[in-house]
Amino acid sequence: MSHNVLVLAGDGIGPEIMAEAEKVLACLTRDHGLDISMDHALAGGAAYDDCGTPLPEETLQKALACDAVLFGAVGGPKWDGLPRELRPERGALLPLRSELALFANLRPALTYPQLVAASSLKPELVSGLDIMIVRELTGGIYFAEPRGINTAESGERVGINTLRYTETEIRRIAHTAFRVAMQRVKRLCSVDKENVLEATVLWREVVMETAAGYPEVELQHLLVDNAAMQLVRRPKQFDVIVTTNMFGDILSDLASMLSGSIGMLPSASLDENGKGLYEPIHGSAPDIAGKGLANPLAMILSAAMMLRWSLGLPEQADRVENAVKSVLEQGLRTVDIHTQGTEKVSTSQMGDAVVRALGEQTINGMQA
Ligand code: IPM
Ligand code: MG
Image (tube, rainbow, N blue to C red; front, side, top):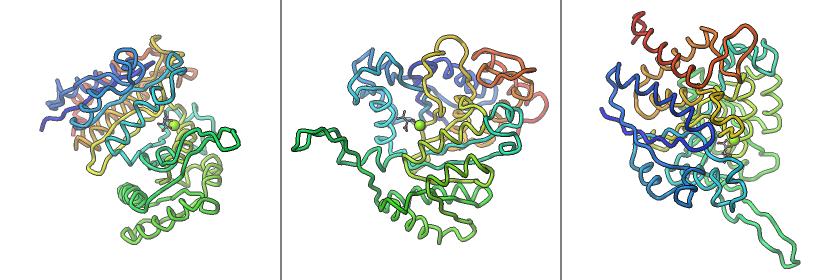
């Protein structure tokens, strides 16, 4: 079957890390018979510079038409002064999520054995860590109306956002989380703030109703402040976490640091039918852009998630993930994960090493 992938490299380190992910996909296409065609379009600051909008209509139409989107990163100081709607993050990423109805954001936090020392927590707390955060992505305070900065009758300015969830929105993300839990160790923790926020009182109720369809899954509820504390205190108590858009934004950055480097973590944003947008959790890192310092592994692992979740190619996803493990095993490290006794490599050297490792798997008969 032929798959159409839209590549949106974006800004900052986006194009550099995307080039490495494309090398990996090209290798799978060339040497392993996958039929993946790649189209490219502009998004973010790069699109703004070219056509005055961070999400050109052509890009949106291509994103709506393709099977999956690979997304690098957008934004940078150059565009920080623009009006909010034109800023790359708000003007490209959020509308893409919403127009494509990508309501389910999967963010794994996985500690690779070779990188235990790079975590800011003690090795015994994080070694073997494997958490999946399921973040609601198209609702809640990020999108609900009313919103804006208004002037009150007194003449004072008032900033307004609204936390709002319908039961349909809660139920569909709960189903996703339960299904993910069923594929893992069947433990799910739902995170809310039901002692204060009515929207999350409903969240908790609907998650509990949904649980009836998944009797094998052990369900727990935590308040978000406690969840943040527990994630640092004893992170391995968690397996799958499901939470709202904003809590998920915060907790997923926290969880990423448990794993050693934010440069290692991919993510998937999925719609009802499994179509998805795949992006590293980290941003565009303008300070290191163009220097060959960026870690391409989160981007490469995002491509692996795409193979698994949108293109129905789980064996190929395994192969890419194994190739990444293999380069870490070889001691190759970009600067963000470099520790004493390992070999510092550039962005493209890392990508080349992953491609080599893919080839070696075939030679050693590891191919599925
Ligand atoms: C993320 C980012 C985005 C978010 C920003 C860039 C809008 O922080 O993907 O976590 O808040 O969702
Ligand atoms: Mg974030």
